[in-house]
Length: 312
Image (cartoon, rainbow, N blue to C red; front, side, top):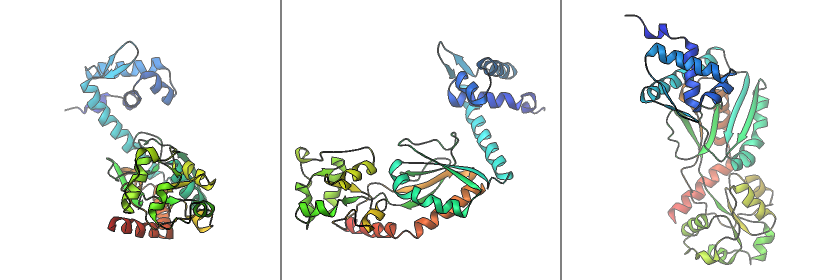
């Protein structure tokens, strides 16, 4: 029996996969560097060879049919595997390592350390991008991610870095202005920065009944960096990671009034596609990163504070 793949050009599968993944012929044409007409022609030729309709052509969009959805899943898996194999066999120790992560983790923890990685691996250039959205590493052109969550993401190999813990942070001047903050309940009357729900969790871990909504935080941002920057400016007390802001604490620019740092989630993880685990630049970054975590005293101390908060 003849192999059905022998009758279908790989170029047609590649065009179909791009159109299915990107949800349109125009976007596929832009990615592949061809015209929309060329994409449409390749898809129609593939449909004729298969005797199937893979897309429903609507007025302003195309939608996969059930056979198209099934083929799209297989085509994407095949293309991902092919790209990974090509990277592996060509020895991709050189080139660009693309990293995506959230703004606070990038600014406060990863970026200050990346220089050491590049000194150790001068042939690997690093492209660091930040986003509050989760990037699809299987489909997007990104090598690795540092992200928060439970570490269970289909198709990805993950390594736990450290916990997602937070604790009150402020300047020494702010602490003195607030009477020294001798007990966690003293923060009930303090100008607090951050999410009301996150503060309620911290008060509960400290054994203090949380305040009502009327006395909630007066300022909240969409990243720890912004909120702690306000605390650094003397505007109040912010919740922040003692791991991210270890340098500011060590320098005395911030103080941590209480050794209570409860968990706000399972933690932060390194993630990359399973089939790319052996790509040299990814393996090099993984090994270096895990060494950085293992030798980070702030991460070890925060773990102890997390345990203390859990006991309370």
